[in-house]
Image 1 (cartoon, rainbow over the protein chains, first blue to last red):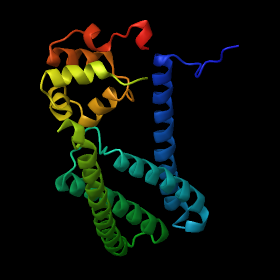
Image 2: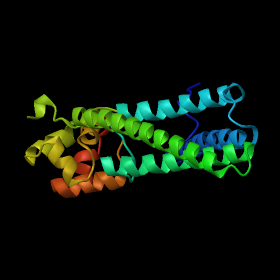
Image 3: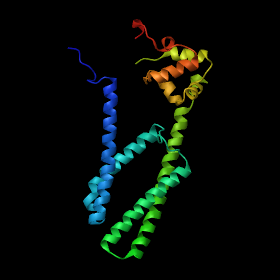
Image 4: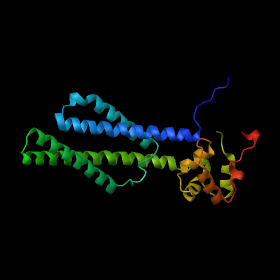
Length: 155
Length: 69
């Protein structure tokens, strides 16, 4: 009996890809949210969230490396320093808010300590994100140039 | 899928490089290259845009006779 390569037609294949994509991002952001909630409630304890962190990082690195290899940046955001800076500041602000909440939960009323720690964590995070985004953008730009180069036979 | 030599031939007849055709139909050069190599199955919308730019019909580029497939 002749077997089919797939049980799905074109439309079903596309629908399945969309479902898988939504599932991936649900897991990605769910893991991040879970780690944030755990940190706020129980404090930062890497030992308790090492597995979640490892899975999250594998997912993040897989997406980042695959996109860079294919010269893909983002659907809407432009690949430039201004965008990287804005994204870095958003990441830094989120990390500052998380630190502020965690420290206040451990030492209620100690606003100055929480504020200083949040500021330092936020600035360091923003700096690291900016470096990571700049590195990823440089790799992606280089790959785009390779992929978009006209084949020799076409010249 | 197999190579789309008709697309490549029509593009060359129009005096366009892959990059120029890609720009005209608002895709990347790689997409045109993959279509010509038979490694990417384009949407009907993209096929139509390419035909409009090259001044040909869908039949001219994308129709395959039984013996060709």
